[in-house]
Length: 220
Image (cartoon, rainbow, N blue to C red; front, side, top):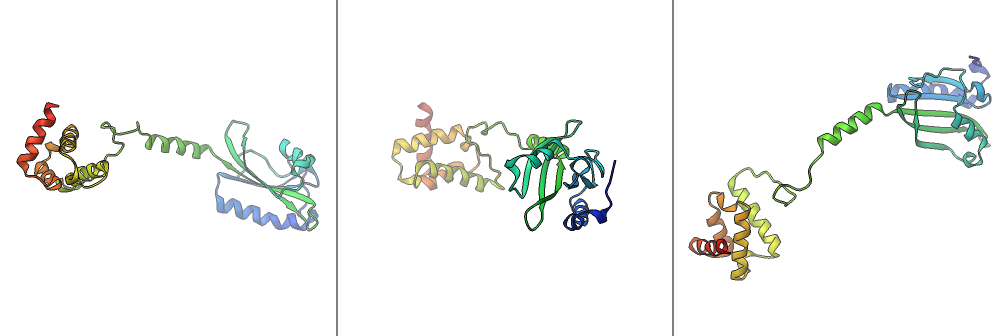
């Protein structure tokens, strides 16, 4: 392929040569950096780094590159960011094209920064599998918490009950308290050691009243 000497390039394009090399070093091998000189579109490539599209200096513009030269749609742009492209072997590319212009805004070149998303797609699938859930917890609450001791566990049950009731539990009417005991039993509250005593304190009753209410709740 024909490659022009660097000395014959526009000064702005010559200045971009170390920039392209620096970007390649900074971003890593999954980023392809291509610098184009648009004075000769059929042999526009000045420099390539990490070229997974297998292009080399002296190569031509892409089909999109020729469109951008021709179309009014791109005439005043400074860059075309994050568009999807594909390699010859089908890999997805997140492509960026920076437009290099002189002081009079004449278009001199393109600096293309292309990211091979192959590894990112693999990580995306791994992350999706690691964060996949089936929805709410089996009891339908949507939350499973992890208390460090029984006291904290009982407090969580009672706080949930307070929030659902909209206020202190001791202000509930008798039938509301009985209904509450029925709900707590369905959630396994009374399997926890000390549950009756904790609930008695919250409702302002003795534990014997709690047992009486629980018998009524079971009848219903």
